[in-house]
Length: 258
Image (cartoon, rainbow, N blue to C red; front, side, top):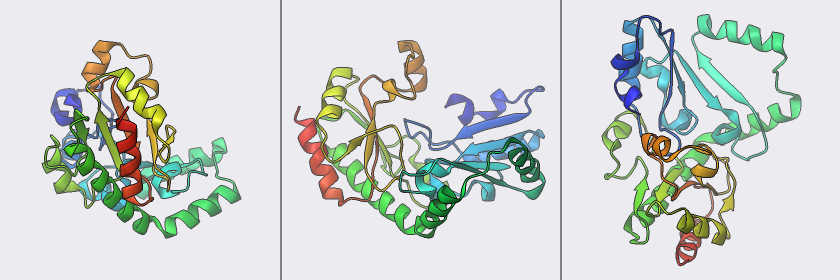
């Protein structure tokens, strides 16, 4: 996070590419995308962003000067948790060599996933709007709940990067992260008691999914590494789906009773 927030500190004479993401997994911290893009362009360095958490509906990095934007098509673009794929967008000069390597290596999507992805893209704006609204409702509930220590959602005024998110995003996405006093045991009990929300490490689908970062993205990290990443053993990462938000909230409420 510190490196992305201060790109001038990490771009040196040997730097050829800066790869970053915003919002960041799993803490939902946000990076000033235009600042990173401008710093890279001023030094002749390529900038690449993983825009998966935001989706191209909520955030358009190319318009902010980023050279290449990557998305996991498995997530919001498809939206139904039944396709594995990815996409990269940018200028023709940059994308053409990538397309050539793709053809040579054979990583071409077969017809059925391509059809499913095309189907999902037709409803992307509608789905993302519902993800945004549902996640906001869930985040507001968690932020009011005294059983929850901290809630990470860019749409909350209490989020440390709310001003940045508000400036560069048109919606705050469907991802919410919350902490239960850094307690692995408390988080695990909640994780195991959920009924509607499914336990899985993916995101961006119609169904709400939850995971524990220390069992997925931060698996095997030491306490020092977790602190550096801003992650605790009591964190839960929630991908809020398209269910009635009151059902999702009720499920969280009963699970937190543990």
